Amino acid sequence: MAGPLARDGTYEVDNDDERERYYALCMYPYPSGSAHQGHVRIYTFGDVNVRYRTMLGKAVLSPFGFDSFGLPAENAAIKAGTHPRIFTEARIIELKSSLIRLGAVYDWRREIRSHDPEIIRWSQTIFLEFLKAGLAYRAEAPVNWCPGAARCSPMSRSCPMEPANDRVTSSSDGTSNSGSSDHRLRRGVVARPRHTRVARTREGDAAQLDWAQRRR
Image 1: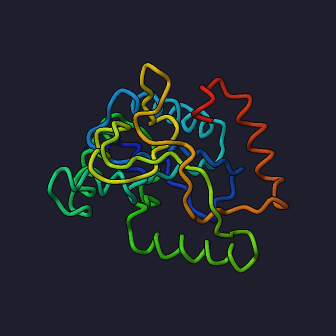
Image 2: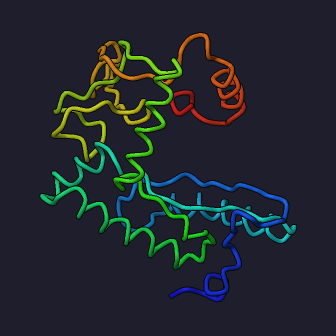
């Protein structure tokens, strides 16, 4: 049930708001079900920031969305024996309900779901513009490769995929149980060597984070 802040639109911001603008974006989660402790921790931090900046008199744009498109959703649906869209949208309802019960403040009018055909359409449109501008190209690159019998995550046991570094499980002898990093695939890369200014900035910022190297 929506509280008074939601009913009054306290944290809804329109494009023509005349106050100083502030953009607060929390990571869009993969909708795996009801919120777990990791969700509670991350979105509480974001919620505190939004409330604080709003009390300072700023127009805080705080949207929310779900990273719901891709192999994780497909593999989870295969495991459940359900169509990916049906399975994913049911998980979104569960997670969104949990976040609302937490009292987290978002402008839910701006909610997006990455499996929405309109979102996919615009993602493809933007990528094609990158391609026309010479900012994207197709090349071979090393990837972590899960051939099917891997134990990189519970949802990826039956389908080949490229697990992220932090999903790779190593055995006691130091070799990977979920594929080899020297496997090479042709894939799209949104960068060229001569367009490195943004990449260097991000690398510099990441170096300041107290994160494990494989998560940077």
